[in-house]
Length: 243
Image 1: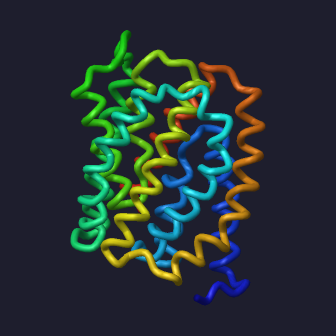
Image 2 (image 1 turned 135 degrees about the vertical axis):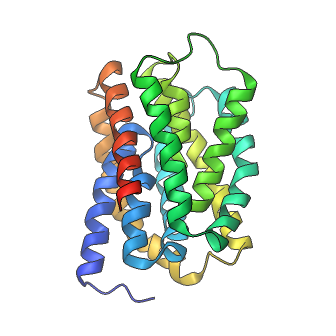
């Protein structure tokens, strides 16, 4: 592994710190920021497993306060569906051009964002088919691009759950899926000593950012959280298509 203090390392560290703040605040979003940028610096095959190490590490830090506030029944169903999608996504990471996967997923996300912005959503509990579909799509996206957040975030924003519950559920969901992702990458030969060490080197920067973001969340109202979350997903989806 070569991670000397060059311009690539500096850029990666800066983006990682900002992504950590976003992750700590929203409970998601770091993969959407880091996957494209780290892939540009180190190639997708190196960056995506590296990101998996970082996501798991920060999830462990955020998990204790999230466990009691999460809606575990829904988290469990979403994670079970994601478990089916992640291996397919990891296989696609090896076989399908990254641009095609990224554009397809981003286009679907933008369509969902438009529906939510226009007022579409659900008033009660989500039905099982919709929950399973959101989890499977998140798993597929996570395995293929490292960005499993958008489908799950939009799933929660379409409902009426409080911001604290949404954030806690997202933290717990990504804890489970990070473990699944790393297992899938290892099975496909994508997780190596090199990209694992790269992830560990960046992890302290990521954790410090997440700590700062958690502090910011404590000062935010529900409506503000929802607006920031939706805007964040929209920005990343558009950037993923343009880059």
